[in-house]
Image (spheres, rainbow, N blue to C red):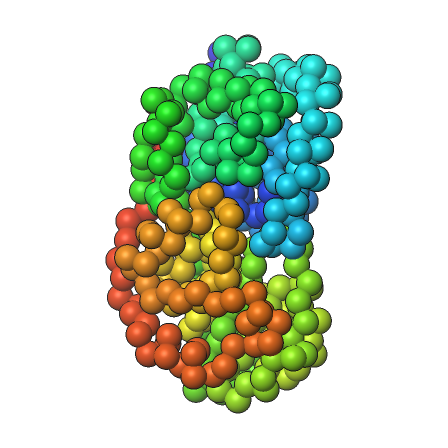
Amino acid sequence: MTEKPVHFLFAISSHGYGHLSQVSPVINRLMQVYPDALLFIQTTLAQDIIAARIKHSFHYIHFEGDVGLIMNGAIKVRVQETRIAYQQFHDRWNEKFDQQTDILKQNAIDILIADIPYLPLLAAQSLNIKTIAICSLNWVDILSGYFQHDKIIEGYLDIMRSAYQQADIFLKPQPSMPMQWLVNSQTIQPLVNAGTESRSKLLLELSIPEDKKIILFALGGISTSISLKAWPVYKKFHFLVQDGYDSSADWVHNIKQLSLSISDIIQSVDLIITKPGYGIFVEAAFSGTPVLYVERGDWPEEIYLLKWLNKYLPVRKISPEDLLNGIEEPILEELLLSANKTIELSDGIEQAVNYITL
């Protein structure tokens, strides 16, 4: 008899693109180790967004395994709306739990890996399926930063703690929150989608001269609408932006017009303007690309991300007003002068895969 191929299910939070970005290099390497395995991806992110990151065929399962946070753009958390969303999610807990266990049974899942939904972890644990959590954060520590002495939310936090503590292992890719209460945790090196330096191709697609400095302005996967009409007219710089930036200036290009992946773009630009977030910070560090960031202020993970990034890159804070009015060229030039593209870092992809395959 032929041995049944392993069935892997990755449950990925849909709070922005950061969780997918973090775990996708692990998925890609794991499927090289297990080329005959069946891969299931469970999330509410769009299938084409996943396909852009995952280099292996997969079965798509559209199912919500956590809530994350309700956001007002990329920066501001809508606290009361988040509380309501958790109440609604947990009001349907039994129904959703049954749906999740059905998904696991019907697809004969052998190992569940979560980044970092808690419902799938608990459902898999109830079926004695091996569970692995991988994330630089967890929803217990994130939500605790916004809700104190809230008995309803505290009840949900207890459920989350149980899911994370019962995982066979909780892998913490650096830079991560401390999570000292997770005695089953293991620190590993950063997880990164290291792109390919493609500057020549980028210049060609943009039809701009070689001496132009290219800046990526990206606030992550949560929709944010920003006008660039009040910004200065840049002569030395060319900006690459995401959807939602309503400007038709000749110094701006939407990254959707380019054939390069976001990881290749990060490797090929001179500067990044962003908010603190795991994926873009780690990719910036691995590419040696300086960062201007707008602080999120109350985001509990922010302090750990910034402490780590400052060890490797020139980093400078800008204000929310700078996003409205633009950043003066001398500030951009000053940061570029201190750039160092010779940084060498090691990733933790093989470490994560080894823990999954043990």
